[in-house]
Length: 268
Image (cartoon, rainbow, N blue to C red; front, side, top):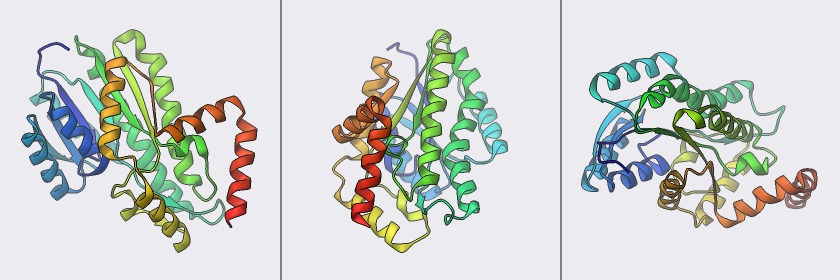
């Protein structure tokens, strides 16, 4: 890559995958805007970025509010000569069956997981296009976008929409010098469950067990993301089991979903 100072904006960067990405970029000398509602966590990420050899600034951002995105863009355009990377990573979790999961929780989940990504793309795509060195958008989706597991309708829908949005952006921006990558990781032990909304305690217990058993780490996802960026790769699907599911779904979509339904029924 060129020797100019590179600048990245990462949402949900106070912990988890967002933090891991910030620290990984720091090793290559990036300057990172650490965006989150968790001020203390953002300060910790800034310190970790600086320890790793980069520089950073903490920015409070509620990804659901267009006015906050617009204000952030204004501040950064005054401070930075260009932006090279936008990572729309902030997300929330929860579970409940369709018809039981409250509509207010549907709106909350879509507001954060989907509109948080839409806002980031809407307010920064023009600045990325203007970068003479080329820019990159990374959106965090999930393996849930492929598996569409029962009791996770709100989460599944929000993440599937992020994949579709990323594919659309890939087609729109490829000829304009902006590359797009969408992350579809499986379970990664992070703080995602802490703020989740669960219709039944059994659903939270199940999610906590799956997170505890997960071998995929936030650092694994960060490393795979940087590799995908270098290769101009659209999809990052992790781990191996996730890639198998992804390919099976594409080869035999109805058969795959029938297997999911049978598996879930057998564990009820």
